[in-house]
Length: 599
Image 1 (cartoon, one colour):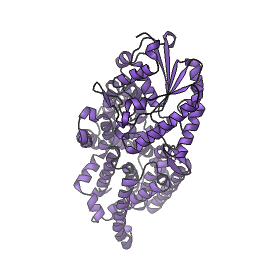
Image 2 (image 1 turned 90 degrees about the vertical axis):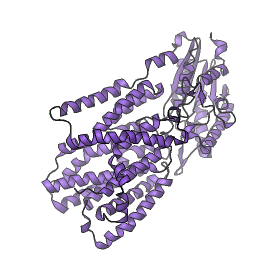
Image 3 (image 1 turned 120 degrees about the vertical axis):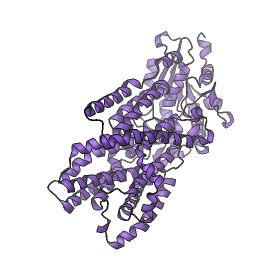
């Protein structure tokens, strides 16, 4: 198959969009770079399969999958041990169990379905980041690599030349249409992650690339009519302009995105690829073949693998880079991806492992990565023992139960970190949940929890409430809209009374303003609206009071961010045991713990 430099440049453009999106949303629609990857991958992989069939009359599946493994696995295996080390010695205890599961899902290439099943919103990635958040797209690609060659081989059975290509074209278009229909059918504006992450709903992009490969192979531009070939140049320029506008403006939860927006951007990518493969001297092809883009395209896999872990780990608290933090993150990413490409990825892809121990080395590497994922990524036992002792309920003289979302759990850890003798803190928060749905945040079980724990005090904390929206009449609504608050207050008024008991004081905790990625006037206005609702809810339910954590942490809209050199909220939302020490002491004072327990 001929090598086309413009396609390398297109891959570089795609990874640049993703990097800029993940730099705190510098490019709001840069996530669409993944779709450009998908379309290009479908085109190249299908082209390889078709060329092989035309050359030899067959498709050798085992060598194909072996080549894919040599291309993808070495860099992935190299990335996992450092992530496990981070989980063991640096990460917060609350995130470690999830990260361990993420590592196993990444190795099995099912990370996208793990995210779907856990109902974790992809659009919360800046608030509660996992170092493997980005591997969902690798999972979809690998699932395609596994199944599509089987489908192509079956479609090409007993065919040659144009007839086989027409079969593959029809198959790819039929499956892409089914995927598009599934996206519309499964779309829920309150839970867009299902259609954003699902293989069935996102495979259309890869299949459209596959269809183009069947219709227009690399180097096959001479088969096009001269007029169409000339028109591709201007169409490709218009397509790039359209992609730029989408990358700059298209929100990831927009109704339009899931009802045509994705497909328009994917068709634009098809036009650009068609122009690149039919006219190497066209303006678009020459622009994409510029050395910087081609170079980024060559190392794009390593850039994609490493950029998100680097972005999560390299924070201002660690790098002290101030406004230069984005550049520092980019520099560190390149500093890892470049040697990864030249010393690991390219040598193994070209030559494989040394003869004689190839199979053993591959098995050993896979076993090591799996062992690291399962055994290595565990919370520090010393950290949990020293800073967050768990007092058995039967030995407690004062009991607190904390319910809500993941921020409630992190608040509960800080209360345990006070190490008050006789104080028991029961953590009943649920990760990645929202009170905007009936079955979330363990809310239906709050009455059961109250009877089981019989706490002296219950704290209701939904510090991530402003991250969640609802679908209403085909649009996505956030806090400060009447529809959002009607649903929020409805469920809170139904569920909070379940916590009220004769010997239990119940506090609804106000939400402090988010920091870091959430430190914007828009999000802060939403927090104000939520706190007004929380106060109204508490006033309407007998036996429920307000604990004004927002007033303590953010008086006059100026939030305390550090204590004794430690961040109070590690990601701007969730609490650190050491950093939040003063805050948790204040909470215990407000609810009367020190008057009830020995110090």
